[in-house]
Image 1 (cartoon, rainbow, N blue to C red):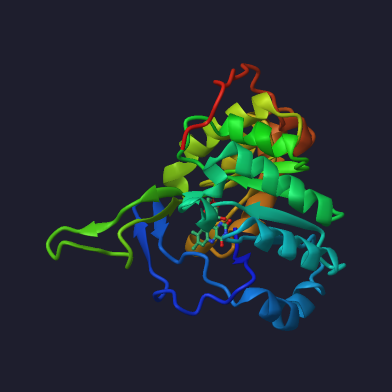
Image 2 (cartoon, protein in one colour):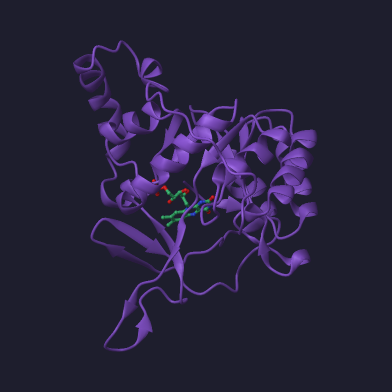
Length: 271
Ligand SMILES: Cc1cc2nc3c(=O)[nH]c(=O)nc-3n(C[C@H](O)[C@H](O)[C@H](O)COP(=O)(O)O)c2cc1C
């Protein structure tokens, strides 16, 4: 999880608002960020000093914005990989989300791949009939990994005042409520592509992480859980060895893909 960096500042966004559901979160924060120049000047110098892998999330409204961001990230040695957030509306194609169009997924992945010399991950959007088709498009475009999945569209409405609790009418749903959907999508995608799948969607404990790995994820992102428990990451790492030992496994690597049934995708993803 994290902020996506675009070329332009988004000062005009409404104030960030989130609402917690009993088992998750819905947010309308949008893709608010300070833009590429501020990232290079203020954030990157601190980011580059972190003792971990550094993965930058990129977003744009036009293909050329992704190209420009890829070139900018290539020049920053401290960026180990980029993740393409394709959840933004494509202004050149009437506002259709890039990420729901397999041709756009393949094209943008290919264009970034040609400009950024380190790993490129393509993050896939749910809300299509087959994420596996999108994943194959990303793989055809040269993605080194695919991330499954971004948030789902949802609403939170105060019925008495008949207004949205999150500012805009709809927002992105995340957290434990979406985990069964994310798990199914990770399984389907992992069955259909050769590149590694990075799971994202509702993981909040070590058992969740191992469930995602069992259906084929090679890595698992944790987002919303940090809003609920800032210590979630270290807790998950601490819990893993005991769970693995209980199942007779020596490492998390051994858990990957143990769920054997395979998914057959349909021929196209509709948006
Ligand atoms: C407050 C908030 C902000 C987010 N911002 C971004 C973003 O800027 N770019 C992006 O690709 N995903 C963003 N996401 C989606 C997360 O990265 C993640 O894919 C999703 O929340 C599902 O994982 P989780 O249930 O572990 O949070 C955001 C999610 C939340 C809750």
